[in-house]
Amino acid sequence: MRSRALTVRIVRQFMRDKRTLALLFVAPLFIMTLVYCIFGGAGSAPKIGTAGLPDTVAGALGASSASIVPYDSEADARSDLDDRKLDAVLTIKEGKPTLLLEGSDPSRSRAVLLAISAMERSTASAAITPEVAYLHGKPGMSSFDAFGPVMIGFFSFFFVFLLAGVAFLRERTIGTMERLLATPIRRHEVVLGYLGGFGLFAILQSVLVACFAIYALGMIMTGSIWLILLVNLLLTLTALTLGTLLSAFAGSEFQIIQFVPVVIVPQAFFSGLFPLDGMSPWLHKLTYLMPLYYGGDALRDIMIRGEGIGGIAIDVAVLLGFSLLFAALNVVALKKQRAI
Image (cartoon, rainbow, N blue to C red; front, side, top):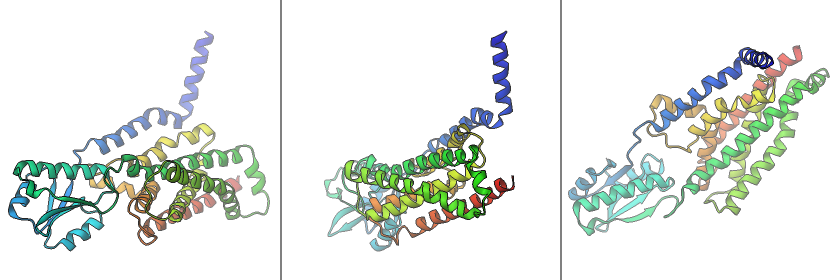
């Protein structure tokens, strides 16, 4: 009977906690749907731009698994390669085929090389074997080099989100926030103060993660370390403001953890760690709502492609916008607490 009473009590607790029920039954379905959308597609063939190829070579390449995009001039093809609209450009220089790989994604480079190998086998002629060059990256570049920049941003974002959410919630639950709001201090000053305090440790963490990945693990690095730190700082600031904002809707540390499958997991899927080429175009647009997408894109641009501040300006501006938006919403959330 005592076991039965205990069981009934636990069931009643679950029934009263709608958020836990949603986490238990809805969150797995939500995540499985995302996995299906990302990995359930057929994927996409590598895109190879061509210019000035003989008919025999163009015909053999057209029979391969690659998507061929013919151009009138090599300059046009090279421009689209710079904009990442192509995976490679195949041209003829001094009578010899030359293959220029975009190179920042090893899996796409391998797909292009497989298509070229299929072309060579179909013609059985060594004369069309191209010389291979890389626009970014290098031969033998590992998957760790390709995914590493995104992982730097992910770890910084994830841990700072948890730190900020749990710490700010504790300030609310132990009464510190109420006592503070009883003083003449303004709400935006409270937000700035907490962001300054938590932000100091977030900055130290981002510097540690970035420097360890580059200098200890030897991750590929062709850009400026200061730009890496700038992007990591903005990512952690976004995570900090988002974590403190969501803490206003949680009643315990356990409920902060419940936000992880809804807030963090989708960002990991859309951050660039996994290929999104097979995803429906309308679903692909969700990436634009994910701060981690902009952080991962900027970190890849800096570390693999060697971009400067001009090349990552949009990503930096969007991350700054997310931080300001979440900080402003934090001020609004504090208004409700002060009223109480």
